[in-house]
Image (cartoon, rainbow, N blue to C red; front, side, top):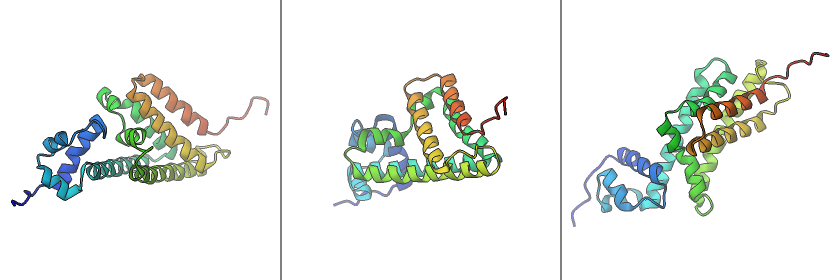
Length: 200
């Protein structure tokens, strides 16, 4: 029996990720994946086990990249609150095709989480990392006086991640950039210190 030909595993995952991201898990056929990766069926099974194994590898790659990009954005701005705002506004600033494509991570949760424990585990780990990153930035912003003393850092981290996910879903369903920016602005305003009243 001939041996499966060698191929670049990382490149294969990248190409498969694009197909899954575009079509979702169920609507993606094995033939589509093989054509995109440029490999044979035997090679795919030897490297990933099956379509599900390949999907998990692609989803894990996507989440790692998204989390790294989020952490990089949070570190790139000197003001922690400005960094958080930049993350939220980036959804509105994305090109129309990027907004329409949406987030593969959210897509996987909607499609698979109710029946796939492996996807649930990946989603939980990614969520925990993002929440913790937001929580740290809120704590630092609070220390600098950019966030009100009334704000609970842990709840704020959850709120910001939920807001980000909601923005991505809204963007995919066609929400206008100005609407997305308004939601981002509302979220940031909720964190700022409450100005003193005129009577105080």
